[in-house]
Length: 430
Image (tube, rainbow, N blue to C red; front, side):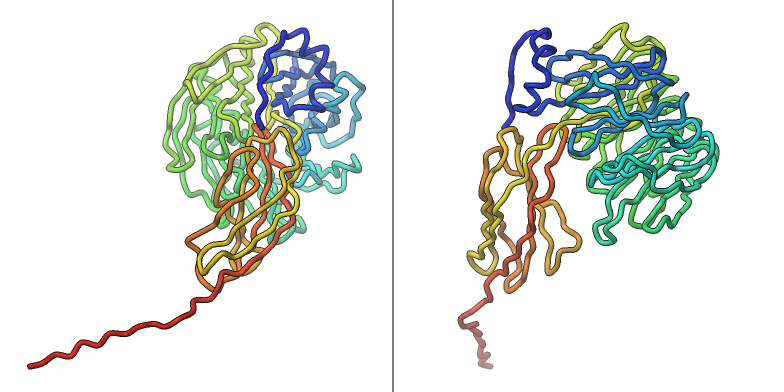
C-alpha cells in the first residue's frame, strides 16, 4: 500500500526515525567528498540530513534490507558502515585496499564488494560480520562494481569495471574470473533486476557496452553523450540512466530495444546517478556546480534540489534504499482444471505497492516473472498452462525502492485431459 503524507520539512526531520518504522520512505544517500560528509535525502519531501564522514567519501551502496549504507573512503583506504536508523551515529570503519572507489552489495545482502583502484583488487566483505573475507586481484584500475545472484550456483556474480584496462572482470563462484573487453575507459556499471544484462559506461569513447550475463559477451554498444561516467537501472529494469559528464546531460536508454528514449540537460559535470528499483525517477549528483538533479520520466521534467550542499562529490553506486515490505506468507496453489492454477497468500505488509509473481516449470530452476498484482491482493489466477504439468511458484512484495525476500516456493500440477477424443472419417463416393 502506498501512503502519501503531507507535512512540513521540519516535521519530517524531527520524526524521521519514528516514521520509518511505520511507512516505507524512498531515500537517497550521497557521498559528499569535498566536505567529508554523507547526505540523506528523503525523496517524497526532499528533506536533507547530513552526517560527517572523513577521508573523502566516494562510492555508496545500500543493503537490500535498507538498514545499512556502505560508503567507500577513497582517502582513507576504508569502507564505512552507516546505520540508516541511527544516521548521525558513529559509523563502523573497515580497512580495505588502496583508493577504494565503487562498492556494491549482492542481492541477498550477504556480501559487499569494494573496487580498490590503487592496488587492482576487490575486497569481499561479510556484511553481517563486517570483515574482509577475501581479496581478489582483478585487471588494471578497478572503478565501478555491481553484483547479481546466480540461483543455480547459489553464489553472487560480481562485475568490475577496470578503467585503465578497457575491460570488465567477472568474478564467479570460487573466484573464477572472466575478462570481457568493453569500450575505452569503463567507469560505472549496473545490472538489470533480472540479472540478464550489465550496462557499462565507457568514459573515453562515449558509448555504453551491454553485456549478456549468460554468455559473458558484449551484445550491443549504444552511443550516448560525451564522457559517460555513472550508470543506473530503474523502473523495474525498464530504463537505464547514463550521466554524460562532459555534456552535462543524462541519456535514458530503454532496455526493451536498447533505444535512446530521451536525453535530459542536468547540472554541471554529472557523476553519480541512481534510481529506485521500481520508481520512475533518478537522482544525479553534479560535481561541477554542487547540485542534485531529479529526472522524472512520467512527466519528463528535471528539477534541482539540495542546491549548494554538494561539493566535489562523485557518489558512485546504487545509492537509493528503503526498508522492503514484509514477505507474503502462506502461499498456496490449487489446480482448477487442465490449464489453470489458482494462487492464494497472506499479505503481511502495510506499505507494499504490489506483489510480483514468479513461476518455474517442472523444477525450481529458472524462475521467470509472470505478473505484478496490485497492493492488498491475496489471489492470482494463472491460466493458459499445459495440462498434466507441475509448476512451481513464489512471490514477493515490493515498494518503490525495494523488494521483499521471496516467499517459500510451492508447487501444483494442472489436471490431466480426460474424456473421449472424437474422430470423424469422411467417406468419399466416386
